[in-house]
Length: 562
RNA sequence: GGCCCGUUGGAGAAACGGUUAACUCACCGCCCUCUCAAGGCGGCACUCACGGGUUCGAACCCCGUACGGGCUACCA
Image 1 (cartoon, rainbow, N blue to C red):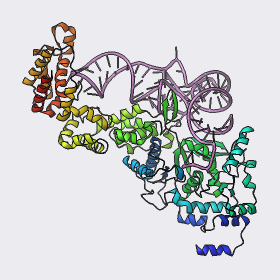
Image 2 (cartoon, chains in turn yellow, cyan):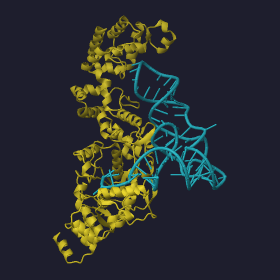
Image 3 (tube, helix red, strand yellow):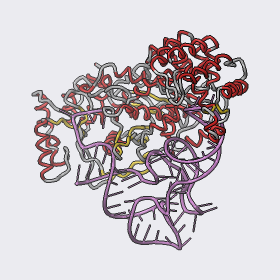
Image 4 (cartoon, rainbow, N blue to C red):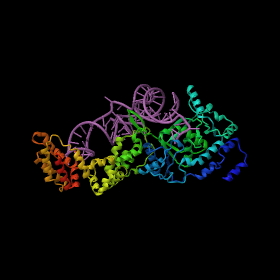
């Protein structure tokens, strides 16, 4: 550092260099030092380097998850690099602890960056507030080149300008004749910097209103904009860079190949392109992802973190939507041809499918909870007993202690319950999320069954107490749970018949006067006595898992309540 | 207001100038069925926001209108 400083002293400086030196006396690195420090990455042909750049303003947004998921997949499938950088240049909005939280939540979905503010990496620091020394070098360079200047306008003055512009219906902003400080002489600028006036640094836009810039967006194709003419702020009065500037410097020196970001950034593209061009830097490839929308009162709007529960990834985690199912939904949202592929490759890993920009939609997709539910059901349905039991336990340990205790009290028993009609081509699909499990199976546990049956016995009103007791007694006399499922059921029909129930629903419908009801009615009485509810998973297996003793005590207890 | 982006059934969408406009979810009907969850079969856009044009031919190309969304900060 000393060496560079001394070199400068001996040289004759231009006025711009003097100004730059005055503002950044301690900055001695040059642009080419940075180029050497952060050389282009050596990666195989076609490898994509992508990034996710959250700001630490709270929990992970569903839209951010979707965007980072896409970026991550793109990098992984091309054997590239995915990194996460924290955009914390606005300290006012920062929420403590959220930067760790974001990474944790990404991790839950299997999205682990190759480089980040916790994983480290060669192109760091990965936190913008720690990269000030880099931005300073670039800003100093811009000042030296006369491409940037300090602006001393106060908020009040800027408001005045805006008002004036509104009055005469001019475009708002700091540009052209309105950009007062742009025309300050270097001497004046130096003088005011010296007198410690608070100031920002603005980029001196070379743009002109009539010119157009065009970009090729990887998703949308060619987009044409009017050139940027605003002298945007690149350094705030607190010395930190603005988003526009910081991201740009980072997206050059961190060497991403593709910038995947939300559509809301498209409008600022002209600014970013102008900056890249002015600095002589190669533009990365931009891909603007559609925002996730929600339908409300027949209108679409952006999913809002404040108003919509489903905007927060946490919401789904708490309810226990299966991660695999959620990822699958993200895939269907990301690429329109994924579903078709899935149909043809039901058992394959979803990551065998390669995402492509061409198959991304242009229109902001609605977040379809119904479809999430459907996919989640499929996903839970496909899991093996071991898998669903293990994952349910993990979920319960974090979000539902009561349920966790129940599972842990007898894990094998829980697995037996979860194994009911699992596996095979057409597995049961009872659950869409882990939170659904317990309410459906709580009756399998005595401590819950006896509470529930005390509260409610939803028997069909058309049966009298004596009829119900007769049904239960007859069943108790011969529950047949050691038989095969088929034998058990025909046995059940036989017992039912002796109690006056038609073995087939059709028979009952044809001669309702000859029977008390049909086999369904008969089974319902027993089901209620044993489970305290009208619906259960396959009753045969329920009975087998409960076992003879429990069945007897439960039915006897139920009878005692009548 | 200005600048961008978008517009195919309730939702996600395919078709990339040429047969009766794929497919998935939802919905409806039927079947199966001891309940539920499933599963099977079938139905659901005389038409691609609207109006012009180009073409032998348009959902696909062009123009205009409408509607929806985004941006328009010393926020990201």
